[in-house]
Amino acid sequence: MNKSWHLSRRSFLQGTGVALALPWMECMGQDASVKKAPKRLASVYFPFGVSLPSEKSEYADWNWFPEESEGTFRFRKSLESLEPLRDQITVLGSLSHPAGRKMGGHDTGDIFLTGASFRGADYRNGISLDQYISAYVGQQTRFGSLVMSSDGGVGEPTRATTLSFTAQGRPIPALSSPRQIFDRFFGAGDASSKAQRRKLQNTGSMLDLVLENSRSMKKRLGRQDQQKLEDYLASVRDIEQRVNRSTAWLDIPKPEIAEDAVNLAVDQSLPVEYMQAMYDLIFLAFQTDSTRVATYMLGQVAGATTIANAFPACLGLQGNWHGLAHGAGKGDGAEKLGRFDQLLTNQLSSFIQRLSETQEYDGSLLDNTLVFYGSSNSKTHNNSNYPLILAGGKSMGFKHNQFLKPGANVPLSNVFVTLLDAMGIPHEGFADSTGELSELRV
Image 1 (cartoon, rainbow, N blue to C red):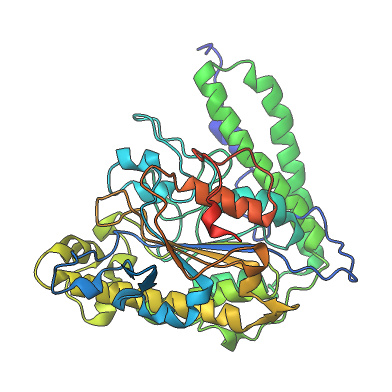
Image 2: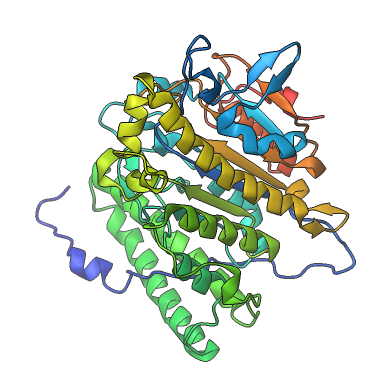
């Protein structure tokens, strides 16, 4: 870079710090005579793995994975609430992200939906599965995606508090307040449509100036600074797209949802009620077709620095989530962690059950929704044999009532390309995928 030329960060960034509540929208019209249910994906992640005592242990029935016998399987205590939903559930074992096996046990949450590989000190994630799908279906709904976590925000590199990453591998801030999420998706807001339109027009004008000025600026920068500028401009273009969609949706009323449909007063100090509220918000967002893609990070792997780490206290368990996972191999530790695994599964089961009981066209909401649930550890710090569940998607050709173990050499991204194919999303593979996982579909 020419040292005689200096870029004023203040002047360059001025006016660009825009946070928009609504994504952009390109296509609003739909032929009312064509009744075709939308296809959706909800992805839910939890940290630190699960209870996995040996088959010879007195606590063997707290092993998270089902017990196999004579061509069938039995849900053990941790997953027993899934039994009534057996025909809508597939449990997956043996899978992992190959790149994750080379990472620290507290780093893999960042790549749960990306499958990316971090090389040395260069932290550069890839696009997450939800955002890849959103790029194709997000323009059909008011919101491109719903990104949530119990801790909120983005966290830090390799300790992200979000599952969602852009095409440039940048973390997308997660929402953590049920009230904030409800107001954004269903609230009327306190600004008039005219005022909102004027604000969006002003924002669009400022973004135009930034993009125009960047063309002459780029040639005056060194290679490293050019890459930084490209990353920044990608963010500007993301905002520009959101402005366009927000403007298109201004005259379309939001769905009318009664506030008592969700417990909006709850927070993370009441973990059970809080998790239920977050699942309720995903349900309502899908039911109203406000979005077709949602992620929820129940907790992340940073240990004692996170809010969700204290969740096991709701069962009267001593210590925290991280400590509970570390103690699972000692004494009655397998049962203690298993009880918390069971609580998490109960919340998931209630969500899946509600989707299955909600009529949509000639089937249920669950028939047109894929629910992907799991962790990037089997046991704490062990980055293989992820505990995973896939539910729903009957109308997309998925078959269930299975416990599949495709093998340790099969990358988890093969599941991702199977989901993409079923949803009709074009792709040339995803991350390190080698093909579909054919056992998942009819």
